[in-house]
Image 1 (cartoon, rainbow, N blue to C red):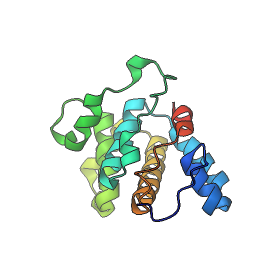
Image 2 (cartoon, rainbow, N blue to C red):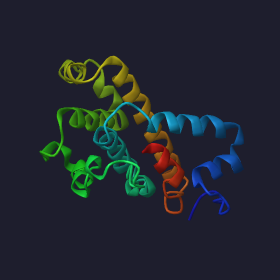
Image 3 (cartoon, rainbow, N blue to C red):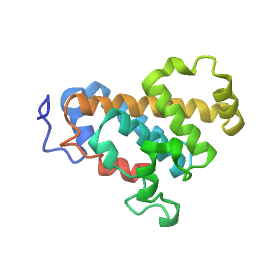
Length: 173
């Protein structure tokens, strides 16, 4: 049962929450979400990090969401369900490119034990060999966004009633 009243009259559930309860954050939330979902990563790289956080957070809506599912991306560029299923056991899967693997590892460590990244020369050497500094910063901002909003929805028990907004899916594509 949600911990706050869910607005049933909202076309976009998350925007409805913000409009009803935190209207001063609405414009910033919409802008930030658009920026995060338009970052310069492949769909697979983006989804690898996003889904790892969804699994860690336990957010049902986030776990069910698929970037580009609305058909605005070419079908062949979208990851299949085997990709999503393998993310929980990413260390033992051969489905991921080096960048996808690093995005998953970064997301996981950032969410579970961010201090483990302190001084990890092996990890940061691999990150810098595969990502530009700009991409590392953008990945960090995206992962922080995924952690914050996925946990907010889960803690307030809104992940049962709030699927990822259709508007975010079409913006995300």
